[in-house]
Length: 119
Length: 403
Image (cartoon, rainbow over all chains, first blue to last red; front, side, top):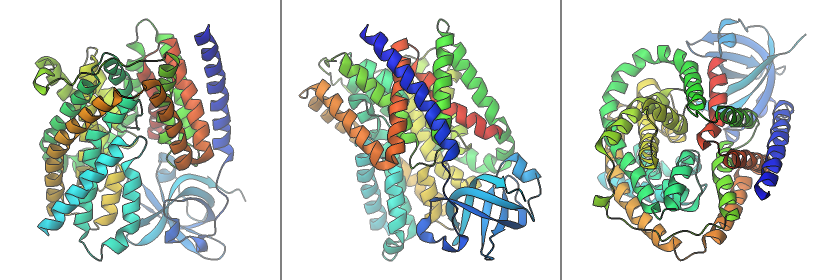
């Protein structure tokens, strides 16, 4: 009887918890960060930035775009995923969520999500 | 330079011993700290010296991290699957043997790393792009095989796999530090501890069997070695795959059901191979697949063959030292655990793990920990195989590789 009660409780907690976590994973995005404020002290931190892709370079299994904000501050963003590699992104505005990384002494964003901003 | 190499090696072995036997402390935490201190440290030593420290720490960790997993029921993400077979042997008074089986696997792994490294260096740059295409299919086949192999409880297996799959998807999609810590600790660690506390488990007298009496059948040994030879390299260089997935794939490849000894041997081997080959992968295709390899990539701007040679030497020496060190530590754990009330110890470990999870992953991590513990309990109470909880990593890996 004790096990039956624990099993019921475990099912309730598990299912309710998973639903809550799925909901949180959708609504919890980091607030927008200004590109100018990104520095080496923020390495590995998750950020969201907004800007226009001014250039793009396909490098086989990933792509690098240069994302510039309204203050003309720019930062390289690395992307993977079939859709990103095949579609042309230049000239379009995006919100990018990802982690700040460093490559050859230069800061860049390793994108987890990229969403086009509708004009 | 030689003195610096030796000191870095010994310091790394010490650090790896600490991270291995301390529950929930991961080598990545030390690596991140080291990278943060590197601008200061590089005033005194060459980058390769710090690399030797990281390599020695990482390899030692793979030898020692099964000790708390088996004796205390406190695994980390790479040892989660050892909980069930390890605990089974512990309850038979054979906890020490369980650790030794993992060490056999780890020491064999050192030689497998040396055998595979030339193949990696020569073939990997040529075939990597093509093998990547097959990842989702390997994972889907492995997942289906896992569920279908549970002949009498396929529906239960699917329920547990699906629940843990959704949990994994949600957890890895949330902005959280160290998401695998609460996820796998809850699924495999705290759920086992809770059932152990509820059963008021009393440990039988633990035997310290002589090494020459801890045997494994030669046929089983070769089957396991072959399975780890095939599965581990895939998981050393392919994204979305780690030690746990390698262990599952290896268990499926080995064909017949592995007993506790075989599975522990497999997971010991896989754990060390994946870590060791991650450095070779970094050299061959400039991809980092473990936190330690990421740290090495940041320290070595130009990763040369000479650097790889030093790393391989460090792996060999560390592996031999760590093997005997882990045997010594296992004996201490074995003797000490008999003097402690296991129920109270389990309760204390549970509280400690909960505190560590909250400290490293925040309140979100604690929420994941509660949910994953409940999910792990479902598997235990329904009598489903705990390997189905690896849906928590397999499902997100499949989706990530398909996108």
